[in-house]
Length: 315
Image (cartoon, rainbow, N blue to C red; front, top):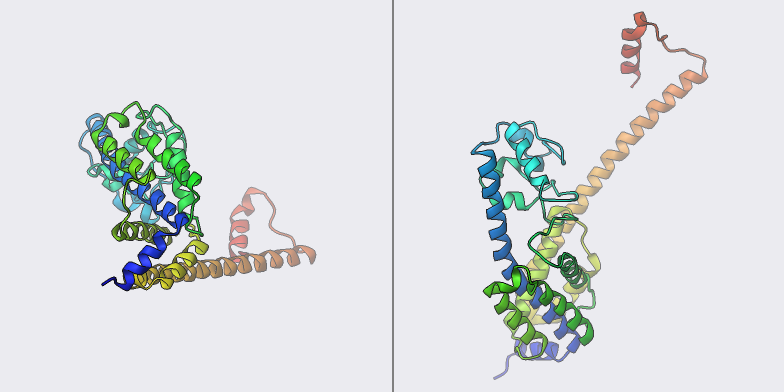
């Protein structure tokens, strides 16, 4: 007996545009697995290299160096001499601006992935492990186009072009092409592109779960969230009862995070409005004093302390 879920799945699979959306999603997911192993090895080697040069030091001012807690640096040197040396070494790996906001220098000395966070979403990174330096940018665009595709549908030509860019990255001749995991993933992705791979409900679930988790992470991090895409996903899931049973809770959690983020931003805007209102009032007060002919203390040395005290009281 065919279940309602099976019927709904077959109906969705008959939509060629949606099927192509799933193919692009799976291509990115499969490539991520291969690239994770590769990048992990690169980061561990880099981390060990830096530790060899700098020695086994540790952070001496954790509260000041932890940038995620509002202290420390935004590309400047941390107060701790050891962390400051790590900043210098990390900067050597990039020609452009690094992302420091998610970094925690107090963990750099022991955890390789903590320094990897400095390179996430950064621009103009020195891609010495790739022959074709534009490939990561191409794949990033594929990912962004997928995440912001409110129709959840691609034409055959769009799908093939996007999947081919993912394959091109995994086949970069300098290093990736020679790794077995990349070779295996390329075979799988090509079979997916060429309709030799049979899509199953579990593949769809992985795709939707990954997209939902990406949007949830963006909302949690305070990054820009594509609300039209979230709305489309919500509607799509509710229209398919088998998906609603599986993913409704995840959609609700994203909505909750977006609501919390809005409340946080509204509170911040209110605080800024209050600060601006107070500043405006102080400026108007000074303008009235000037208009009435009242003078401020002169610039002679004897009156410097008096002037400072006067402005402190006014402001």
